[in-house]
Image 1 (cartoon, rainbow, N blue to C red):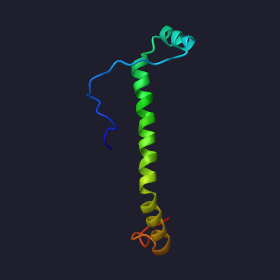
Image 2 (spheres, rainbow, N blue to C red):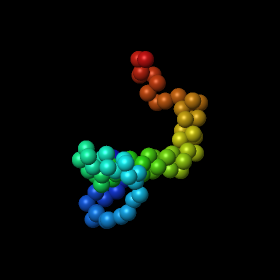
Image 3 (cartoon, rainbow, N blue to C red):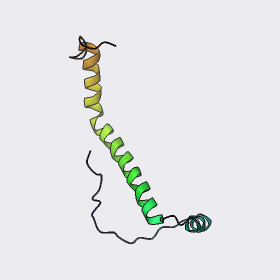
Image 4 (tube, rainbow, N blue to C red):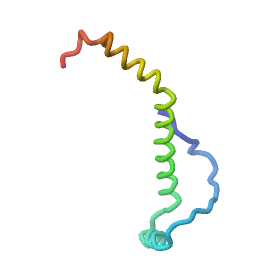
Length: 81
């Protein structure tokens, strides 16, 4: 599986707005906010890309599933379950 983004790309400073109490608590636990936000954002992007791929390939997936229903799978005669 390939990476969803270039992990070697340069870092870019940005501004985010966060609940002040939550930010204070995170800092009190010495949570690396940038690292955790980046990991969360990567997960959100990965899920969106998966969703987009499914939408773009829905027709082919449905056609394949219909074919398997109709004709079976090439290995049906060999499975023992």
